[in-house]
Amino acid sequence: MFKVPGFIDVQVNGFLGVTFSEDDLSASEFIRASKELLNRGTAAFLPTIITSSEENYKRNLPILAEAMKAPELQGRTLGIHAEGPFLSDKPGAVGAHNPDWVKAPGIEFFKKMQEWADGQIKMLTIAAENEGAAELTEYAVSQGVAVSLGHHLAAYDDLRKCADAGATLLTHLGNGIPNEVNRHENAIWSGMACDGLSAMIITDGHHLPPTVIKTIIRAKGIDNTIVTSDASPIAGMPPGEYYTLGNRAVIEENGLLHNPDKNCLVGSSATILQCVNYLASLGFLTPEEIIQVAFTNPLKAINVDPDSIRTGVEYIWDEAEKQFKEKG
Image (tube, one colour):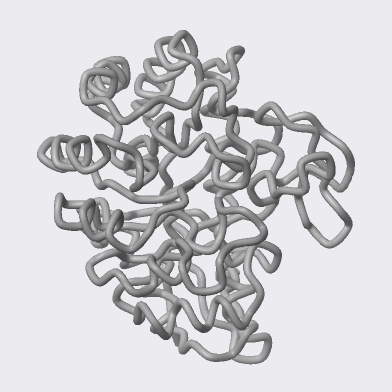
């Protein structure tokens, strides 16, 4: 029997209609959404704030940092993931982020962000090809922040330069790029080829087809793969049309969450448990390997001891259905 206290999600943009990047976020709403998420197979997570205006960072980062101190969230919210603003502003690469708020990599602005966040930014996603990316990487890593590369059009040399400066991750590899790329020179192949960078992948059944999931895992290896949900603020909501993260977004009956106007995805409608179970359904990983990519590896990426995660809940591997279920 394989047991785990839930799974770790390093990229959660919100839940049940609560947007961690919205200008009306309140501490009470963050706590409410977080508690509900933690009741659905998520052992611990990083609340994620996407590319925003300076005013929004100044407002929301302190709210997140303070709300994470709530007793019911202790040991379950492990820091903040800042996905931006140092991304590519190019169509496709920028994804659902607002290109008007994208900034060139800048140490001084990141210092401001970390001050507003009371030092709680534990992961930073940046575009590797932008001038100053390696310098920002080196500084952030020196401050104990895990740097991930994504939402970019980076070539191999760009990735290698940032990896040499201390970057260790790739944000949702295979996504956050244009729908059409050069068949050889593109950020997916470069990411898989760049040793030292672990690949985060969204295994919700919509962001990546099974063949790509399998190829990335085979290229990177179990030790260097991390499953994440990239949960949208409307994750957990029923099918329908919504407005989230500055986008018109539609959740289809099958769970696909997309902006039909931009022809892009807007995060995932899935929880990390749903992503894990979809990955398990593909049948090419053992339960031990799934636990590694969805529990052990994400904690290692942000230097958290797996033994410190205590949830009071146990998920077991159901051999009959090949998925993790809460122990009754």
